[in-house]
Length: 305
Image 1 (tube, rainbow, N blue to C red):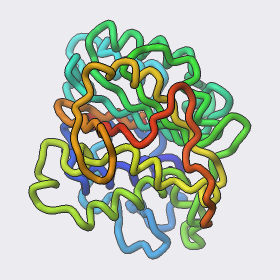
Image 2: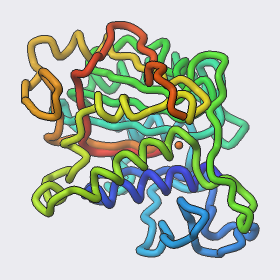
Image 3: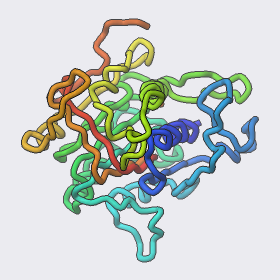
Image 4: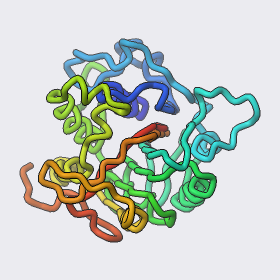
């Protein structure tokens, strides 16, 4: 049900005001049209089935067998064949803020594609280095929701990258909301926690906030999002890596007040998203590299896998 989790994130982007033109969506399976879907044509985030995430149409840029490691890397690096459709390209530049949100099955330093191909932490490290060299981003926020997700950015070494994983080494990332009608879990716990927090912000948002270039998404302090994760509820420990991002922002971070944070950096201009899911007092996010503390925020165009 990986496609359902990605569709949940896509629905959130729409609600927060991010247009389709700034999203590259990759779905390795076709849940709405799957013969085993008890509610054909629909994808849901809740067992109440009150909101169909496909009701207003779903623009999928890469689907089924198009979702390969090669195509994912080409989207990020921009190395497409001549005549490749604009809608399948990530039109970012050296002033862009890019969000990469990946979900699927994975393990220690790898993520699977179609269960017969995988991308490694070293593969991703080389890809991000190529992106930086080619001027494909200014800042990049990498989020991965998979088992041992925090290991997938272990090999990263390119400045300007901030990374969050749903679980640490040796930990699984668990599904949430078992739907007895559909016979599957609807979403992963990490993705669900992210969506629940951002939906609450959207409920309180004003029209001017939602009509900004990236809507409310560009105005959320990252420290508040990270602080909303509860390891007991997630059954895993989210992992943060901020050393590469901190080093690149020492002389560049825009300092703004608000929400109790000091020196919160809101990164909103020219960003891109690539999307190729109990009341413990435990720290909500484990850091690697230098600690983010209560300080940073990010977001702009998207590629989703």
